[in-house]
Image 1 (cartoon, rainbow, N blue to C red):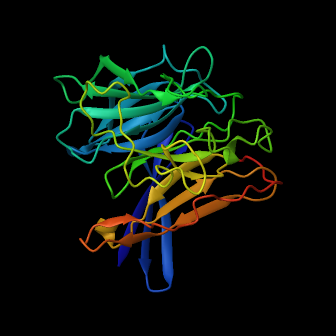
Image 2: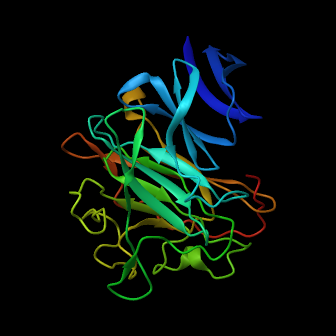
Length: 303
């Protein structure tokens, strides 16, 4: 028998969905995991302690749940986060090295709603973050050689906001096309903008690094071919990649990247990008996948 588990939110309650499959039959049942939450959008297991979970709330709180019991804040970003609607605190991610004190969050900031990807560290108490450790990653602007600690968002919707470390150890960041509807600025197809893209960066840099990351040397546009593009870009042509994941190698998966891209009127979209095994035995991104997902009209946002 194989079992699986996923989590959904309902009126401030995180509910565990348990799936038990045997042959062609499967059963699905819901079981409350923790109550007392407000606008939970993500849950992350502490890489150091599987009995600890961090619940990301859209309003800017990251709550601690230990052995199924709701505790206090791991981090309170309510003074920095612009919420709500499609804005807010979206994601929390820990690096693959569980011994690292670093972690990263993605949110829309006050007062303008621009996207911030910030690095923090834990305090001496592993269940409490150090709010003074905040460092906002620096992103390219439309002025060559200039950087800024945010990514401009022209509208209130389509912020994306999910982040995940891939099997290659690099951080992937999903960004929406900037909002409104039908991408009026054609931002998702503009290789000189970060909006409407999947980004891939190396955050394993010293604290003294002024950007907070490096661009992996095998990113597809490092050599500015086949188009001149910002080198942080891994894939373009996305609308609003609200969630994405990697097919878990540790559980027999391939390492493929699977993106849930929010639709508009009629269609929702799931984009699949395979991974390939290198001669060294490690899993890497395919060198010739379809990196540009063609824009489609007539889709409605259901998130």
